[in-house]
Image 1 (tube, one colour):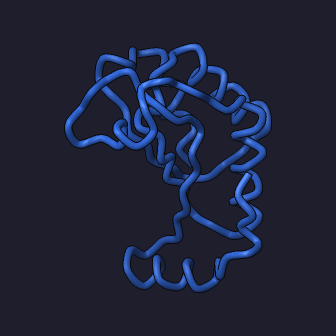
Image 2 (tube, rainbow, N blue to C red):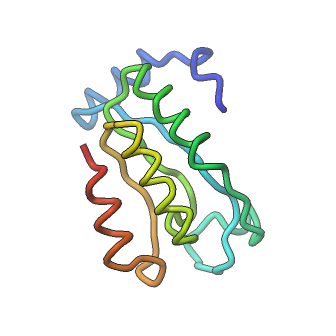
Length: 124
């Protein structure tokens, strides 16, 4: 988990509030992707998918909320790459009552109605 307490969080929040009207910070839940999209960071992280647990992700989300951020940018290449995993993350967020706005990258071929409905319920 990143040591966010070492960053100038107030400075970041001030900048984003002035620029966008909200505060945001990144959270990476996985590395690697099997696809080879031209616009992606796959060449940096490789094509071997490695992922954090849903519990660990929501722990970090709650830490971000405690720092006073309004939104989270899930900086994964494709947050929805593994259907069971994204549904597990959604369940963990719901069970803990974690509320924060968020955004992510995805691919249309990695979501279905159930995934989208679960993800949309989480957006505070």
